[in-house]
Length: 365
Image (cartoon, rainbow, N blue to C red; front, side, top):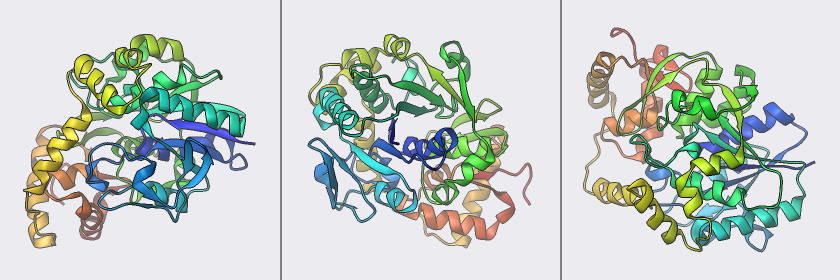
């Protein structure tokens, strides 16, 4: 029996899809997870999502869709977490390629549904920014979610929209999302997290890390991203809700506008017009800036005093936890140093590792 789960925003949504697949359907029904190869600059220094042409070793499923197996490789200088996910998890990871706009993604969905005839189809978003109107001042990454939402509503199949961890992406607040959330489908537990625990040790997703942390009982305020957005870790964090697909489309202005787009450039243009920005432009500007920034030397004598200063300032802001991505960027390290930094901190101060987050102590220990 095949289940199809569409990871609405790529990145950590694919990891959450693997966790949810086991939680909802058990280990016997292995899901096909359709996801973007879009890992942001910490993993992939090339701005924007990767397409099929950016990989070697893909395995064709349908004319428009390929799987990313464990032995696939992103063509340098690009990078991707998908081959490693395929190596460590039992699911098939199918590449969602948005370069032909919503029309292309719709075609990919239709082909997969025709090929597998899945028992169920879920569209999963961690955090809930797929429900954004487009004018929210805290909105940072509407593009990927809008493309998958626009495609999903045009497919002749029953697709269930699920939002896990309302507000955990730091873009929309739980208060904004609560009125549109429908039935509670599942509350994730520590046992659910164990299925992906090894992935959480290296995957850079912040929203899925917080989803896992709240499922394990972590509560407080977590600071994320380069901007230091505060995210509340509450009892709502591990909950998975169903949302009416039509209601989501009616709410999402960008998704409605891009229905007939045939190029990613068109989607970007609509995002600039409706939301006031394109997140790929942000990545282009940040990538150019990072090229000129010499990284901090990565050793305990250089890093730990910088960490102490960051933590002291974070405590004043009421922060109890943060992510390794946030620490990496706050200390002016580059993405390639994130894993080594994580290991250095855990080795130096293991009592602060609140897996998979870093705990900001109430006072220096």
